[in-house]
Length: 259
Image (tube, rainbow, N blue to C red):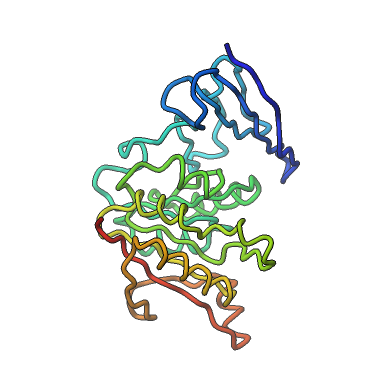
């Protein structure tokens, strides 16, 4: 019998109610088991239809044909759901206005790209830009980046994962909220194909040092050179403005180590 334990973290964000519903299925205690038992977490938004008898089943109309909507929000996707045959797939976590994502997609028509962004307004704008650009190799996924990497991505599916200028959470008491932590890096490692890369960039020097410590502590990556001529890497509007002021970006290129 399904028992709703409570609702937490209710917030109104960009015309959407974001909340967590804790559901007890009475058997297991770990979140997101493969079956219909255990403690589950439901990420809700205003336009999702909820059925308490099957909380994992969501029905939602995509905001655009350029939106990637998972068929199931509470299990890992199959590689075939995420990738188009053998074409390499890259993901941009927290893609913002989508300029970096779209420039990459234009430069590499032989690859596919998915941008991850949780805010509805931004997702709509990115979807419109992809449509206007006539791009068939780019889509937007409206979800939290941490959730996507740790709970949805299948193993050995993504060629590159980009993380550009995430929130640095500068106060020490907020460091636990930083995205780059050893568990997250483990999930990134699992999602990458053999030889796949995790590319991290930030304007915040202390966060960069913190991230490097986490990367080395994980023991999961080989560090490779990242020069301006190493490969095509478009600059974001923020990066252009930042560098015009004489400031520098900090970046690290991590290649998946085989365990």
